[in-house]
Length: 119
Image (cartoon, rainbow, N blue to C red; front, top):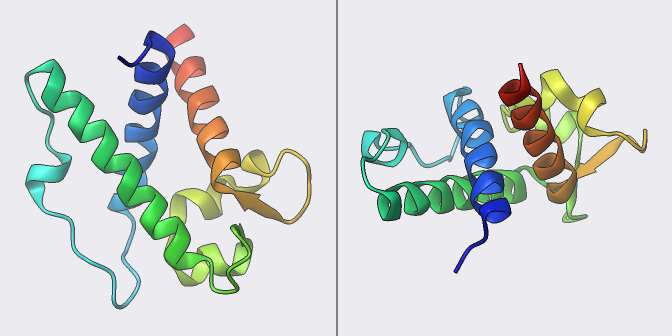
C-alpha cells in the first residue's frame, strides 16, 4: 500500500507530467488522449492517473535521451520539445553538471509542488 509520501510524490509528478504533455510534441511522439489527462473522481482512478502520467513523462524523458546516457542535456530537452525541462533546466540541475537524470527531475517537481502548497 502506498504511503502518504508516495502519493504526494505521484501528485507532484502529475503536475510536471501535465506541463510536459502540454508542450509541443516532437515528431514521432504519441498524442495524449483526454482520458489520460482529465481528473478522475475516485481515489483509485487518481492513483492510476498519477501512475500513467509518471510513466508517460518517463517515456518522453527516455525518448529524448538520444545518446542513451540516462540523462538529458539542454540540447536533448530542446530537440524533444520538453519546454518545462528547458525553462527550468538550471533549477533541476542542482549539481551544475550540464545534464539531469529522471531522479533529478522528480526531486525538482516534488520540491516545487511542496513550495506551492506552503504558499
